[in-house]
Length: 234
Image (cartoon, rainbow, N blue to C red; front, side, top):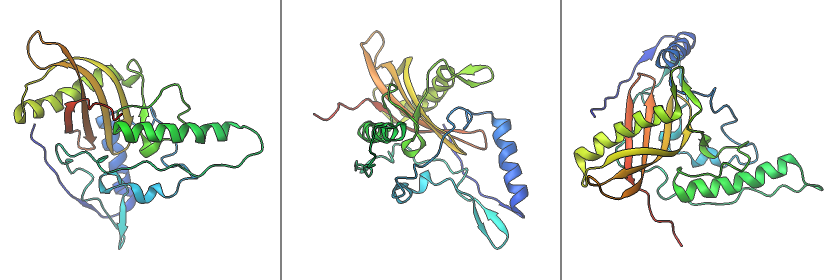
């Protein structure tokens, strides 16, 4: 799949923001209405520094103009932004009795470790996802993503985008079978972390694979990586 990048300047913030909103509506990708929550937990401000450039989707204003040279840029293929990320616990909250907030922070630390260990591909759906690490959240496959499609349908399309690039560049050639689960991070450079079953040869055994893809505001869908699910560390 051929990817492209572009940059543009707009004369005023109002026009730029309106254009951004219009593009989002036209594209009709799954947006924050599906995963609507705080991007960062107030108790963990250090995570602002933790995001790499790929994660920063802010619109920069300078001299009365808004410039977003990277908003449509395709991500680098076969590079995992989780490489080198290490887990550290968020500060403990000292409360006299158990509260919903304490439980939410406790669950957040577990979810954070799970997402770092799995590089974004697994978080326990039984925990409270009030605070979301890097904005990533598990989403049910049958949940509506677009007016005429579920997340299962949407993620199948994203997997095929990744497999097209994988099968062009690598061996073995992989055949898609079915979606297992998925995690999603909304925004103007939304990301999907998809686990799926595949075959590496006709009539071969099922193999669990991972695909990571991005959708940008110009309606393009970009592959980020496609690989067999790594063996968990002991």
